[in-house]
Image 1 (spheres, rainbow, N blue to C red):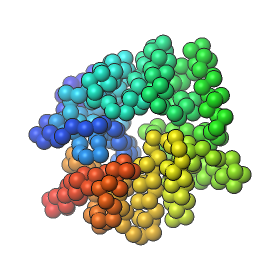
Image 2: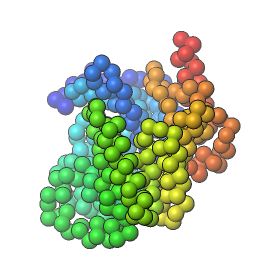
Image 3: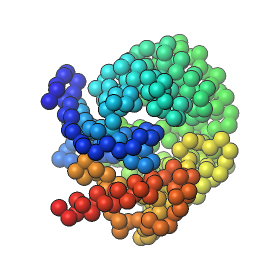
Image 4: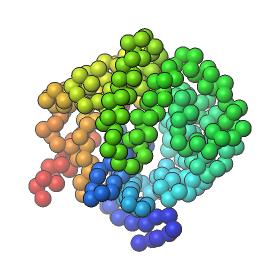
Length: 331
């Protein structure tokens, strides 16, 4: 057990090392005895990287990071969780240089956010520009991302005014703001007893924008869909899927639009009492493994190509989740 002023880290050896591919981060929140355990798992569409599990405890929050500890992307995540942001930025850049990061716009954006947290604003702006050059198009996210709060108080931020002016010529600023509030409420790691009420208000405000024909861009539809995806009724989920499809079918769509089509479809089906198709919903975490109740999914509903098209979990991943669920049930 290694300790420092920031956190408590535990490394658990896992004998199983799985194949390498692109990385992304998934976060799930569980309320356990008045505190939250946030589990960050470095995964890809095929499998989990699994040499080690590292637990980082910060106050009442415990983070579990699973992945290949030899990879720079893993090291960047670990450094980030320990608030070593300058190190996280350097590891992220090394990951890009070593070809670990396939989505360069996202990778450069992550590097920029780490530099911002390290209060290195010159590099922050430099990597924001690299991210945009590689295709990052959700300029509004910069305006509301909490990692850039310090940057927004500097002259460096003022130099980027034209970016936002141009973005909001074709995108709805109110929708962007509502979406930012929705994401902030979920990613803060703090339990919010009023979230359901606040979500309801957000849906009402988004619906007003839609009824007044004030949304038209792929980003507008994507963000509106996400707001309704967090609704509570069958109708909310149906409408979320309708909006997600519109976002997906437009040119220059948001990079997460494909996944949202799959996720909104799955949630809509489950809310109707039917089995989901893609396996985006109801993923659990037991004994260090992702699990999925087989009674909640029709594994024959979507082709391999259909899953790939929407960035949904592969059928191989789904089978592993189901096996882990059954193994846990049989213990």
